[in-house]
Length: 149
Image (cartoon, rainbow, N blue to C red; front, side, top):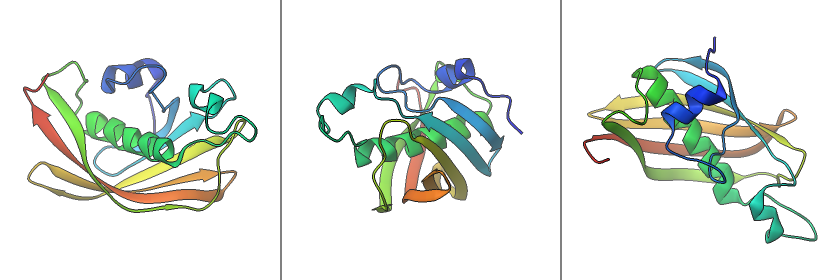
């Protein structure tokens, strides 16, 4: 079930245009999993230079969209907003793999599952798909930090 709108995402993540890479949440289950969407359009600023003749979404930005999804899951699970005293920071990415390019008109469907939580460190397995075809996978580690804002 999801009741997360773009306004809720803006409340949970500190990112803003052009770096907010999550448009919508389809499903979320606290302390378990999330399914989010990134609509990739030709208007993305990175397409001006990557690559103008054949636009491809940079792999690091696909990973960033996946990481932002884990951030939404963490904030949602703890019923917090980014303007609270807490923030979730990315502390590691492991086993990142890219299977195919992503371009304008594609819709990234991002899934992430919380696989471990120990002393404020969270580990997630995440994947991104376009049209049911696997685009990327990675493991993410985040930590919650308070009083750093």
